[in-house]
Amino acid sequence: MRELILAGVDEVGRGCLAGPVVSAAVILKKSINLELLKDSKKITFKKREKISEHIKDNSYYAIGIASVEEILNLNILQASLLSMKRAIESLAVKPSLTLIDGNFAPKGLKNYKNIIKGDEKIKVISAASIVAKVYRDRFMIKLSEKFTHYAWERNFGYGTKAHLEGLKKFGITTHHRKSFKPIYKMLSS
Image (spheres, rainbow, N blue to C red):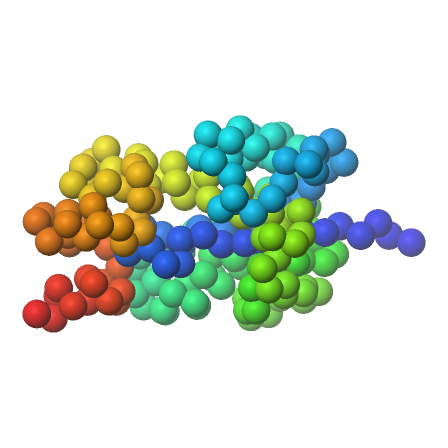
């Protein structure tokens, strides 16, 4: 009988006002320390960075990204599914079963199971959530060096007070999601 190759998939950044949506697909190797794996939102920034490196050293993983333009053209759900599909298709090892956080899956995917709150319940999905979060956070920190008025190095594109104040004072960048309420309102007023 063939060994079951299990992949976990999760996305981050769906609720952000700026930046891409990022997904990770992860297949854990036997060398992984499962004790480290939990929902990325329950781990501090510094710890998450270290755990992400451990996961990457002890797994097959791939990142999938959907751009701000794709979010605008498709909508956030479809862009999230596109980023998941890209991550899954980029894996060097093909999974026999893919576990996906949430209740939606990319079209055309075979042998998958959706798991609501999967990032809290299933270690391989937790690993994907950590890798995706760290990748996206680093991306937003890098962007914040060029776009200094939005506190992206702290809020990673979420609609915090500092981010909203930056929008009011300095306007919208090409990295803002124009279909999202605060930005859409600014554009239509």
